[in-house]
Image 1 (cartoon, rainbow, N blue to C red):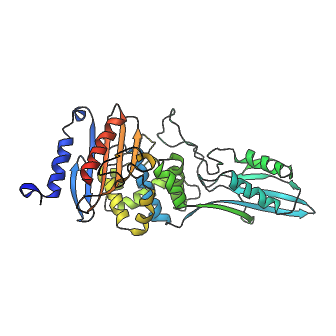
Image 2: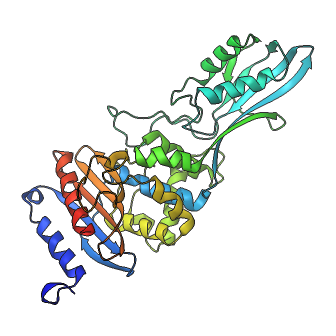
Image 3: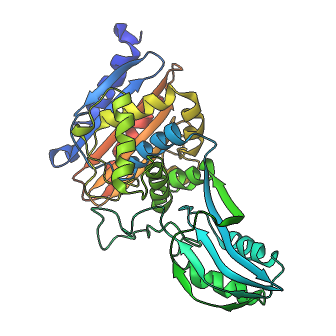
Length: 373
């Protein structure tokens, strides 16, 4: 109990209510939910069921659904295959590379593939170099993405985030003095092809830049890995959405009440609620295998990621661990913090109709300070 018999929860509600008196809310909207995980009860709700575009807090849904379905030990894999015959120091056949939509695949990984060809003890490759892009559909952009955004390329075979694998691979072969007589083409890996090299990165390695830096390519790569887990021959955004919807059903809500269009939050067609984001955070908290991988990836207020310069020298600094979201007209924040009474909280704040994203960020920061103090 506080002064005059006022509970901590009552004090929190009064202070958030006072923040909502700001003139900004004469022209903008906000959806809010704060949930006390320790007491297992909602302690603040305001327009929590209004459908709003989440911006990059959509990545929370993608991360939770991916960890729930794929698990914390999941690996993003890129594989090199061969199919053919040796004739002296000449390999007569094809070299195949199957893309696994690994956004961390870089020049070192490419070199490892070329070195695997070199270990075949050949000086001539007579056949084709085939890039297998069949993991996902041919869509290179997400549904509802703005043409003038800095959009990532949705390719399952990138090198340093660029869609130039075949050119780079051929160039590296030449550097290793391997003569190539053939074509570079796209196509599937035959079933009887032999694996000669696998490069992989863990789901945690993908989660860190996806959440800390809000990297959209990493989020879409995660989304399509999730999509591929449906067993579809070619993964699509619809498959990824079905996996997020699966978790929505598990937490007792109805997928038809929302719209999941992509994994990053870039799409204008995503529509969720503060209530839904909190439900995903609650689900993660209740499943330690999910929570233990999710929490370290969240930006920490005043410390790192997209929250590095926010809430400094306040009770929220080093306490709030949350995903930010910003697109034109929208600013959002969803994550966890610990209140002064030791209770663990999760929350979602989605501001929309903003002319300046900073206006929403300032409101979110004040709310976090209230929750932590």
